[in-house]
Length: 140
Image (cartoon, rainbow, N blue to C red; front, side):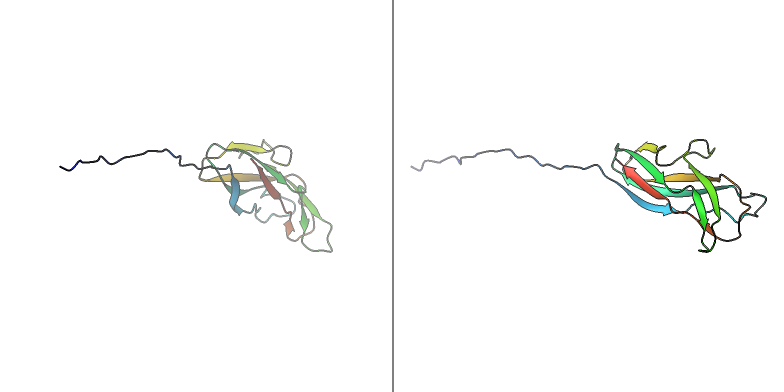
């Protein structure tokens, strides 16, 4: 006679883990470019650009913009400057700079954020091309 033995079993548990870190990164940008303006008319006093940012879902973030607030003539011999302001809204009532930051929350996808601008002073300056470099910084 043969005796049957039952197979022994043993169990254990383990976890499958993942850490998702908060992150934000700029993915693209579109320069703010005013159309050509006649010195005396200020006919093109508004312009718009764009920043694109991707942040993890529900990550709060703030974007600060830092520029001089004055576009300088690209002709090195010129000292002419044209002042401007950047805004968070199309009505151009909420300024956007290093102090007045834009606050938002990530949705895990690319977010297009418009940057509105308005000339803030006299355009009766030397003819030429004017430019200022603005640094966008995201804090999350």
